[in-house]
Length: 445
Image 1: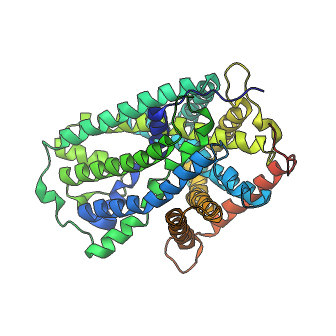
Image 2: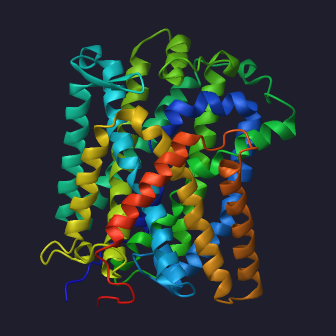
Image 3: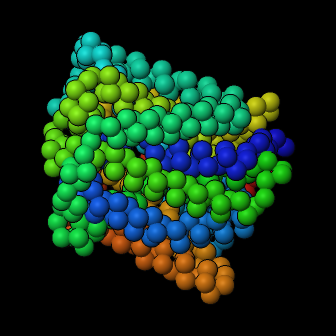
């Protein structure tokens, strides 16, 4: 039997977790974060959010050590729930990872179109009033093809590229943050809160789980750990990813707030952060620098999420929860070849829907991640671990339940609209169709 290659070390898992977590979202939502909380409110909100995620990360570390299976949440729920629950959990979690791939591929067109306006030409059609340009499609498809090929080559090839992009990205972020130190003012940091201190912190805290999801992706590559890798280091990788994400967001929040008055950030602009730096520097080169940084983050996120989503799809196929052939492993490359091609092909199709077509599904994807976290916490609680571990699992369940309720309850601002419910229904139908060829109750060796 051909198994997945066992090559990954601690640094690889850290790059995978951080890469799954941080894409281009920070570039387009930072103005909203500062409007929600102000500089200090945003930093305290992210700190509170990261501390909230630590018990969930702790539970995941315990589960990955106990069940080092690429199925992750699917395998955890299988210990205590019937196969149907495992499938729903896995199918929702797969959505959360997979959607990042077409979203980042489309973001490449937006970023390069901003730098090179000639790319915003040859309009093919419109979705939701937003044009879809041929150069953007070609670029997105090229990115999808490249990463499909890279992941097909082997986990070493993809993680080598992932480590390069991750550390390049971090170096570039530190670079523009330091450059901003010479052109900003402490006065720009005031007022420190956008509302009262407590409200400011809470408003930012609400969005932290969506922006810092990805630490749990470590479990999807648990079967690819090097033989020398110590199982306790799964917890180390997960917790380090959470702290690395917190440090990154606090650094960007501080840099942006120092360079320009946060109230002046114009959310109607495509990239308000880049414009704020340009106004502070009185030079256009900083825009190229920041958008170049975002492009590196884009490649990092696409690659990491393709790894996570393909492993989850592979593991579900191996468990006969969906199309069984998805569980096949390439004899030479030791990669889940059909699962990788499946993610790559679905990404190529999704790109044609454009950003407007993906937005409702992205809202569903955010809740899907919370469903996965909640399932993992409930499963671990039911495995009857120690009292402290059960307390962490219970806390995770309460937090994730709140995350889901604020999106599905119609009384809460920001709840699902009919478009999100339609997107969820379509995803459920697709899940039903891929479930038909499965043979429930069997697990391939």
